[in-house]
Image (cartoon, rainbow, N blue to C red; front, side, top):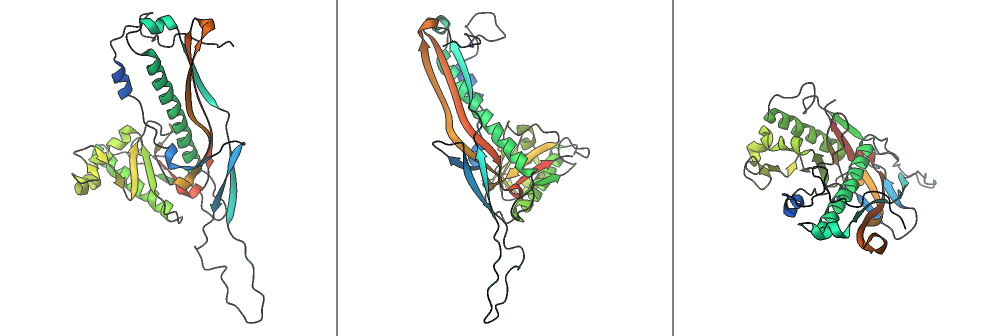
Length: 307
Protein backbone atom coordinates (compact mmCIF):
# COMPACT_ATOMS: atom_id res chain seq x y z
CA UNK A 1 0.00 0.00 0.00
CA UNK A 2 1.42 3.39 -0.99
CA UNK A 3 1.46 6.43 1.27
CA UNK A 4 1.93 9.90 -0.14
CA UNK A 5 3.85 12.68 1.53
CA UNK A 6 7.14 13.27 3.29
CA UNK A 7 9.06 10.31 4.66
CA UNK A 8 11.20 12.18 7.20
CA UNK A 9 8.92 14.52 9.18
CA UNK A 10 11.53 14.78 11.91
CA UNK A 11 13.64 17.16 9.77
CA UNK A 12 12.73 20.72 10.71
CA UNK A 13 12.35 23.62 8.32
CA UNK A 14 15.01 25.62 10.13
CA UNK A 15 17.82 23.15 9.37
CA UNK A 16 19.19 21.31 6.38
CA UNK A 17 19.35 17.56 6.88
CA UNK A 18 20.96 17.27 10.28
CA UNK A 19 19.04 15.67 13.10
CA UNK A 20 21.38 16.99 15.79
CA UNK A 21 19.44 19.70 17.61
CA UNK A 22 20.00 22.07 20.50
CA UNK A 23 16.39 21.63 21.60
CA UNK A 24 15.73 18.92 24.18
CA UNK A 25 12.71 16.67 24.11
CA UNK A 26 11.77 17.80 27.60
CA UNK A 27 11.43 21.38 26.34
CA UNK A 28 9.06 20.26 23.61
CA UNK A 29 7.00 18.33 26.13
CA UNK A 30 6.57 21.44 28.24
CA UNK A 31 4.81 23.20 25.37
CA UNK A 32 2.12 20.57 24.91
CA UNK A 33 -1.29 22.19 25.28
CA UNK A 34 -4.09 20.79 27.42
CA UNK A 35 -7.57 20.13 26.14
CA UNK A 36 -10.16 22.10 28.09
CA UNK A 37 -13.52 22.02 26.26
CA UNK A 38 -14.27 18.47 25.22
CA UNK A 39 -14.72 17.03 28.72
CA UNK A 40 -17.25 19.74 29.67
CA UNK A 41 -19.97 18.77 27.19
CA UNK A 42 -22.77 16.19 27.18
CA UNK A 43 -21.10 13.11 25.66
CA UNK A 44 -22.50 9.84 24.28
CA UNK A 45 -20.12 7.01 23.37
CA UNK A 46 -21.30 4.51 20.78
CA UNK A 47 -19.94 1.19 19.52
CA UNK A 48 -21.50 1.47 16.06
CA UNK A 49 -24.08 3.30 13.99
CA UNK A 50 -24.04 6.77 12.52
CA UNK A 51 -24.86 8.94 15.51
CA UNK A 52 -26.57 9.28 18.89
CA UNK A 53 -29.82 10.65 20.26
CA UNK A 54 -29.93 13.54 22.72
CA UNK A 55 -33.13 14.57 24.51
CA UNK A 56 -33.55 18.15 25.69
CA UNK A 57 -36.38 19.45 27.87
CA UNK A 58 -38.04 22.81 27.65
CA UNK A 59 -38.48 25.33 30.41
CA UNK A 60 -41.81 24.36 32.07
CA UNK A 61 -42.11 26.55 35.15
CA UNK A 62 -41.83 30.11 33.83
CA UNK A 63 -45.58 30.75 34.16
CA UNK A 64 -48.49 29.09 35.98
CA UNK A 65 -50.27 28.07 32.77
CA UNK A 66 -51.40 25.49 31.72
CA UNK A 67 -52.34 24.42 35.25
CA UNK A 68 -56.13 24.54 35.70
CA UNK A 69 -58.76 24.31 38.40
CA UNK A 70 -60.76 21.12 38.30
CA UNK A 71 -64.56 21.21 38.10
CA UNK A 72 -66.34 18.13 39.42
CA UNK A 73 -67.71 15.86 36.71
CA UNK A 74 -65.67 17.33 33.85
CA UNK A 75 -62.92 15.83 31.79
CA UNK A 76 -59.41 16.95 32.39
CA UNK A 77 -57.75 19.09 29.73
CA UNK A 78 -54.67 17.56 28.18
CA UNK A 79 -51.71 19.81 27.37
CA UNK A 80 -48.46 19.24 25.50
CA UNK A 81 -45.13 18.88 27.23
CA UNK A 82 -41.88 20.40 26.00
CA UNK A 83 -39.21 18.00 24.99
CA UNK A 84 -37.30 17.43 21.79
CA UNK A 85 -34.91 14.95 20.21
CA UNK A 86 -31.69 15.98 18.56
CA UNK A 87 -29.63 13.43 16.66
CA UNK A 88 -25.94 14.22 16.30
CA UNK A 89 -24.23 12.26 13.54
CA UNK A 90 -20.61 11.27 13.28
CA UNK A 91 -18.28 13.21 11.01
CA UNK A 92 -15.81 11.32 8.85
CA UNK A 93 -12.73 10.13 10.79
CA UNK A 94 -9.85 12.58 10.98
CA UNK A 95 -6.25 11.36 10.96
CA UNK A 96 -2.56 12.23 10.84
CA UNK A 97 0.06 9.87 9.38
CA UNK A 98 3.86 10.17 9.50
CA UNK A 99 6.61 7.90 8.29
CA UNK A 100 10.09 8.00 9.87
CA UNK A 101 13.00 6.60 7.89
CA UNK A 102 14.83 3.88 9.85
CA UNK A 103 18.27 5.40 9.18
CA UNK A 104 17.19 8.91 10.20
CA UNK A 105 15.71 7.42 13.35
CA UNK A 106 18.97 5.61 14.13
CA UNK A 107 21.27 8.62 13.75
CA UNK A 108 19.06 11.13 15.59
CA UNK A 109 20.29 12.39 18.96
CA UNK A 110 16.87 12.02 20.55
CA UNK A 111 13.93 9.60 20.63
CA UNK A 112 12.32 10.38 17.28
CA UNK A 113 9.45 7.90 17.58
CA UNK A 114 8.28 9.04 21.02
CA UNK A 115 8.39 12.64 19.91
CA UNK A 116 6.23 11.89 16.86
CA UNK A 117 3.65 10.16 19.04
CA UNK A 118 3.52 13.13 21.42
CA UNK A 119 3.28 15.67 18.62
CA UNK A 120 0.53 13.78 16.81
CA UNK A 121 -1.41 13.18 20.01
CA UNK A 122 -1.18 16.84 20.96
CA UNK A 123 -2.20 17.94 17.47
CA UNK A 124 -5.31 15.77 17.30
CA UNK A 125 -6.30 16.52 20.90
CA UNK A 126 -6.34 20.21 20.06
CA UNK A 127 -8.22 19.57 16.81
CA UNK A 128 -10.92 17.88 18.90
CA UNK A 129 -10.90 20.68 21.47
CA UNK A 130 -11.25 23.40 18.82
CA UNK A 131 -14.16 21.46 17.38
CA UNK A 132 -15.83 21.41 20.79
CA UNK A 133 -15.26 25.14 21.28
CA UNK A 134 -16.83 25.83 17.88
CA UNK A 135 -19.92 23.81 18.86
CA UNK A 136 -20.28 25.88 22.04
CA UNK A 137 -20.00 29.13 20.11
CA UNK A 138 -22.54 27.89 17.54
CA UNK A 139 -24.93 27.08 20.39
CA UNK A 140 -24.62 30.61 21.78
CA UNK A 141 -25.73 31.96 18.40
CA UNK A 142 -28.53 29.43 17.81
CA UNK A 143 -32.31 29.58 18.21
CA UNK A 144 -33.59 27.56 21.15
CA UNK A 145 -36.03 24.67 20.82
CA UNK A 146 -39.05 23.42 22.81
CA UNK A 147 -39.74 26.49 24.87
CA UNK A 148 -36.15 27.24 25.75
CA UNK A 149 -34.64 30.63 24.99
CA UNK A 150 -32.09 31.43 22.33
CA UNK A 151 -28.36 31.58 22.80
CA UNK A 152 -26.98 34.76 24.34
CA UNK A 153 -24.39 37.28 23.21
CA UNK A 154 -23.10 39.62 25.93
CA UNK A 155 -21.65 42.74 24.31
CA UNK A 156 -19.32 45.01 26.26
CA UNK A 157 -17.27 47.53 24.29
CA UNK A 158 -15.00 48.04 27.33
CA UNK A 159 -13.61 44.52 26.87
CA UNK A 160 -10.13 44.05 25.38
CA UNK A 161 -10.17 45.09 21.73
CA UNK A 162 -13.42 47.06 22.07
CA UNK A 163 -13.83 50.69 21.09
CA UNK A 164 -14.14 51.65 24.78
CA UNK A 165 -11.48 49.25 26.05
CA UNK A 166 -9.80 50.29 29.28
CA UNK A 167 -6.28 51.67 29.23
CA UNK A 168 -5.02 49.48 32.08
CA UNK A 169 -4.97 45.76 32.85
CA UNK A 170 -7.11 46.48 35.91
CA UNK A 171 -9.81 48.17 33.83
CA UNK A 172 -9.79 45.34 31.30
CA UNK A 173 -10.04 42.79 34.09
CA UNK A 174 -12.99 44.63 35.60
CA UNK A 175 -14.76 44.66 32.22
CA UNK A 176 -14.22 40.91 31.80
CA UNK A 177 -15.48 40.26 35.34
CA UNK A 178 -18.59 42.33 34.71
CA UNK A 179 -19.29 40.44 31.47
CA UNK A 180 -18.84 37.03 33.12
CA UNK A 181 -21.42 37.96 35.75
CA UNK A 182 -23.83 38.94 32.97
CA UNK A 183 -23.20 35.66 31.14
CA UNK A 184 -23.79 33.55 34.25
CA UNK A 185 -27.01 35.47 34.97
CA UNK A 186 -28.27 34.78 31.43
CA UNK A 187 -27.68 31.05 31.86
CA UNK A 188 -29.27 30.96 35.31
CA UNK A 189 -32.36 32.81 34.07
CA UNK A 190 -32.93 29.94 31.65
CA UNK A 191 -33.28 27.54 34.63
CA UNK A 192 -29.96 25.86 33.90
CA UNK A 193 -28.34 25.38 37.28
CA UNK A 194 -25.43 23.28 36.05
CA UNK A 195 -21.75 24.09 36.46
CA UNK A 196 -20.85 27.15 34.37
CA UNK A 197 -17.49 27.28 32.61
CA UNK A 198 -15.81 30.31 31.07
CA UNK A 199 -12.87 30.08 28.67
CA UNK A 200 -10.62 32.97 27.65
CA UNK A 201 -7.38 33.28 25.75
CA UNK A 202 -4.25 33.32 27.95
CA UNK A 203 -3.85 37.07 27.32
CA UNK A 204 -7.42 37.92 28.28
CA UNK A 205 -7.29 35.55 31.25
CA UNK A 206 -4.20 37.37 32.53
CA UNK A 207 -6.30 40.51 33.12
CA UNK A 208 -8.56 38.75 35.66
CA UNK A 209 -6.04 38.50 38.54
CA UNK A 210 -5.28 42.17 37.99
CA UNK A 211 -8.92 43.24 38.21
CA UNK A 212 -9.75 45.34 41.26
CA UNK A 213 -12.88 43.33 42.02
CA UNK A 214 -11.12 39.96 41.89
CA UNK A 215 -7.91 40.89 43.68
CA UNK A 216 -9.40 42.91 46.51
CA UNK A 217 -11.26 39.89 47.88
CA UNK A 218 -9.05 37.04 46.65
CA UNK A 219 -5.51 38.35 46.97
CA UNK A 220 -4.18 35.21 48.60
CA UNK A 221 -7.27 33.04 49.09
CA UNK A 222 -7.89 29.61 47.61
CA UNK A 223 -9.51 31.24 44.60
CA UNK A 224 -6.17 32.59 43.44
CA UNK A 225 -5.29 36.22 42.86
CA UNK A 226 -2.46 38.58 42.08
CA UNK A 227 0.08 36.43 43.89
CA UNK A 228 -0.52 33.28 41.81
CA UNK A 229 -1.72 34.82 38.57
CA UNK A 230 -4.74 32.54 38.79
CA UNK A 231 -8.45 33.07 39.31
CA UNK A 232 -10.46 29.88 39.61
CA UNK A 233 -13.99 31.25 39.82
CA UNK A 234 -15.80 34.46 38.93
CA UNK A 235 -19.50 34.97 39.55
CA UNK A 236 -19.99 31.29 40.31
CA UNK A 237 -18.33 30.17 37.06
CA UNK A 238 -15.12 28.18 36.71
CA UNK A 239 -12.73 30.23 34.57
CA UNK A 240 -9.66 29.03 32.68
CA UNK A 241 -7.44 29.94 29.76
CA UNK A 242 -7.16 28.06 26.48
CA UNK A 243 -5.45 28.56 23.14
CA UNK A 244 -8.50 26.99 21.49
CA UNK A 245 -11.03 29.79 21.99
CA UNK A 246 -12.45 30.44 18.48
CA UNK A 247 -10.78 33.28 16.60
CA UNK A 248 -14.12 34.89 15.75
CA UNK A 249 -13.91 38.64 15.36
CA UNK A 250 -14.82 40.34 18.63
CA UNK A 251 -15.09 37.12 20.65
CA UNK A 252 -13.40 37.50 24.05
CA UNK A 253 -14.79 34.52 25.99
CA UNK A 254 -17.26 31.65 25.94
CA UNK A 255 -19.52 30.71 28.86
CA UNK A 256 -21.54 27.49 28.92
CA UNK A 257 -22.80 24.47 30.83
CA UNK A 258 -22.62 20.83 29.84
CA UNK A 259 -26.04 21.09 28.17
CA UNK A 260 -24.88 23.67 25.64
CA UNK A 261 -23.59 21.14 23.10
CA UNK A 262 -23.42 17.40 22.58
CA UNK A 263 -20.64 15.03 21.56
CA UNK A 264 -21.16 11.63 19.97
CA UNK A 265 -17.96 9.63 20.10
CA UNK A 266 -17.13 6.46 18.19
CA UNK A 267 -13.35 6.43 18.63
CA UNK A 268 -11.15 8.32 21.04
CA UNK A 269 -7.76 9.36 19.69
CA UNK A 270 -5.94 6.18 18.65
CA UNK A 271 -2.25 6.02 17.68
CA UNK A 272 -0.50 3.02 16.12
CA UNK A 273 2.97 2.34 14.72
CA UNK A 274 3.97 -0.24 12.13
CA UNK A 275 7.27 -1.11 10.44
CA UNK A 276 7.14 -1.10 6.63
CA UNK A 277 9.43 -3.62 4.93
CA UNK A 278 9.02 -1.99 1.51
CA UNK A 279 10.46 1.23 2.99
CA UNK A 280 13.42 -0.52 4.62
CA UNK A 281 11.58 -0.90 7.94
CA UNK A 282 10.57 2.74 8.19
CA UNK A 283 8.07 3.40 10.96
CA UNK A 284 4.59 4.45 9.84
CA UNK A 285 2.63 6.14 12.62
CA UNK A 286 -1.07 6.75 12.15
CA UNK A 287 -3.40 8.43 14.61
CA UNK A 288 -7.12 9.10 14.22
CA UNK A 289 -10.44 9.79 15.92
CA UNK A 290 -14.13 9.77 15.04
CA UNK A 291 -16.78 11.95 16.65
CA UNK A 292 -19.52 14.46 15.93
CA UNK A 293 -20.54 17.64 17.77
CA UNK A 294 -23.48 20.04 17.58
CA UNK A 295 -25.43 22.56 19.69
CA UNK A 296 -28.07 21.22 22.09
CA UNK A 297 -29.60 23.73 24.52
CA UNK A 298 -28.84 27.14 23.04
CA UNK A 299 -29.63 29.16 26.14
CA UNK A 300 -26.95 27.26 28.04
CA UNK A 301 -24.24 29.00 26.01
CA UNK A 302 -23.06 32.62 25.90
CA UNK A 303 -20.61 34.44 23.65
CA UNK A 304 -18.91 37.39 25.36
CA UNK A 305 -17.90 39.92 22.70
CA UNK A 306 -16.48 43.40 22.44
CA UNK A 307 -18.68 44.38 19.46
